[in-house]
Length: 279
Ligand SMILES: C[S@@+](CC[C@H](N)C(=O)[O-])C[C@H]1O[C@@H](n2cnc3c(N)ncnc32)[C@H](O)[C@@H]1O
Image 1: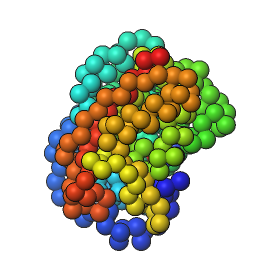
Image 2 (image 1 turned 60 degrees about the vertical axis):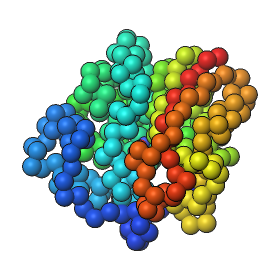
Image 3 (image 1 turned 180 degrees about the horizontal axis):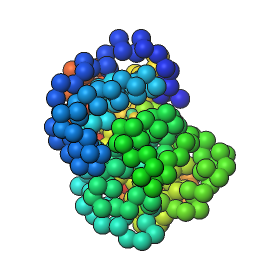
Image 4 (image 1 turned 120 degrees about the vertical axis):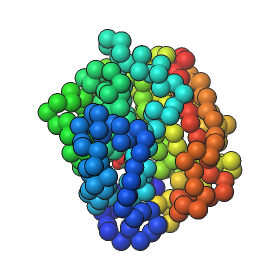
């Protein structure tokens, strides 16, 4: 696997551990104030404390650089229709690599019943910390599943129950871009088997105007960055292997991209995508 799960404070020195926040505005502040009822003066301190503990558990750039404070699903053009879809009885949402579960809590704030929302991550500690981030342990009725996307059905009921239930909306943000193309295809094959016909996979990841390998966060490993065409080609391959059909739509732009950041460069773009199961 290209991604790292090393728990090591030296990761702070590799460029993806920002100084503590001194202020924060936008949807995450609203979520923490309105959903979690955190007093406005406490919000920054609370985020800093969760970032510190999350980074100690799993030193990902998205934690060290505070990218978890961007509610990425909210920026997706289908967000309002996703909320509508999930308000219908029997709908299921799965957030793959959900980390603290921030996007899932935003859906609850926007009126989606929490019992139809599921978070999934290989790192149980991050999902557990999510309860402390959002102060909703014992209140939130969503399930959080500790599972490895690469292992799929071989993990037993933790995965096969999801296959049986079927997913209408899957959120998959900052996930595929962690891995080599080969690993992305094997992850996508497992995820494809969870999606109902007409279901969608939506997300955001770091793309590139020059699709190909870039150094990954673990030394001497690589991860593959897509443009819309290469992402489409990947889903064609996944469809052939799983006897399903997919329509891929995507856009690339500079939103949230910092060419001076240790994890991006001048070819980097935000890739926002919708992958619809059409057959
Ligand atoms: C870069 S973070 C993205 C978090 C969140 N989706 C976001 O957009 O802020 C990637 C997440 O994927 C999880 N992850 C990595 N490998 C995984 C795997 N094989 N199966 C399930 N989750 C995995 C990590 O633990 C981490 O929480």
